[in-house]
Image (cartoon, rainbow, N blue to C red; front, side):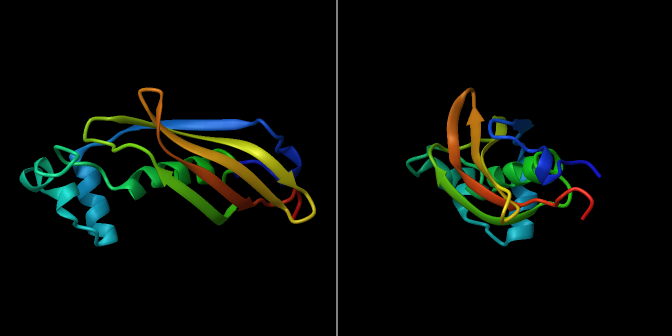
Length: 140
């Protein structure tokens, strides 16, 4: 199993991954989610908005957070309980998004871990929030 048991997680641990957003990602996300808002799909429409061009779905960046949580920290076997999100800036095709999670609290009694979550483009936060995960205990 790739991941951590509750007993191995400490406040301050972090993990991250980077992903370049491409047009195919936006199209695939629109197909899976059903969100075909033209601000994401239509350059002519999006050019007339305050964004002055197409932007990625905010929840696409959130999936990068999910990937870090599910694959690295806490990793396989952990289950999402909650996720708060605030979208700070738009993400565009060609942007490299770095999703980073950092452990802020471990509740051994409830088997839960709280993590700060952030997505960065060029070192600037484009989205941030907090995740709570149930994490498996060793030998259970």
